[in-house]
Amino acid sequence: MPILVAFLFLLISSVTTFASHPRVLFDQGHGQAFVIEKDADLHLSKLARTFVDQGFEVSSTNHPLTADLLDNTDALVISGAFKPFAASEIAEIHSFVERGGRLTVMIHIGSPVLSLLHRLGVDVANHVIREEQEVIANDPLNFRTSTLQPHRLTLGLKNFSLYGSWPVRPISASGKILAYTSSRSWVDLSGDNQQTPGDVIQAFGVLVGNRIARGEVLVFGDDAIFQNRFLHGSNQDLANNL
Image (cartoon, rainbow, N blue to C red; front, top):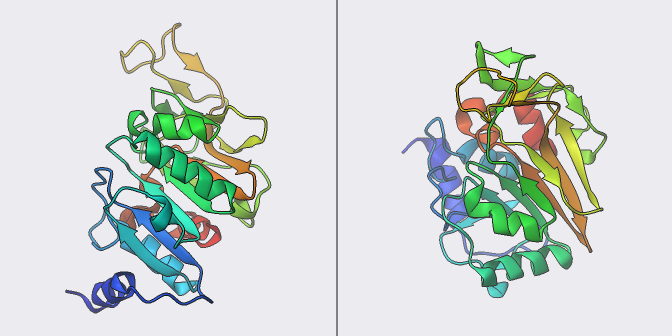
């Protein structure tokens, strides 16, 4: 095991609680394929290390999200869930945010998190975005977004990159889109991999923030942005702000 991964594993395996350290918990109990304990390209060990470097106590769980579990953390990360959340978990997550918790959701597919997102005042579409501007490596599914709204998360950023994003939007009055695509982006409603009259062409939200009572929620339309392979440059700056 590489030294960095071994060191990280020791940190995230610790059960010791330090009151002076903020605590971040990664949910890995809903079919997540990409986890913080592994350092291959698509996993999240570099994101976990980013939190460690900023003084967080980092841990993960593959158990259902209960009040007891969430009472022992300050921030919850849900990245790439493939299995839906039970109604009881959704209620506990909402309560966690209401009492001051911070929650970040990164979407791999929308259906497993749809009920949770609706409870949090956010919606996700069922077609991925294809971009015509700032495209990466000639793949319209991969692109940079530079239309960023003022927020602590976007402070100092000019852009960041996405690698297969779903449109997201707030459905509560307190929600706000924090990053948009260009006005030339589109979704392939016709399913023919080309723009046709039935497709939607517009600027889509790819990042939504929402305040709920004392807490805050951030929802990214893509879960690849913080994976090891893509966590560099402006995406690393985004992770630092997160």
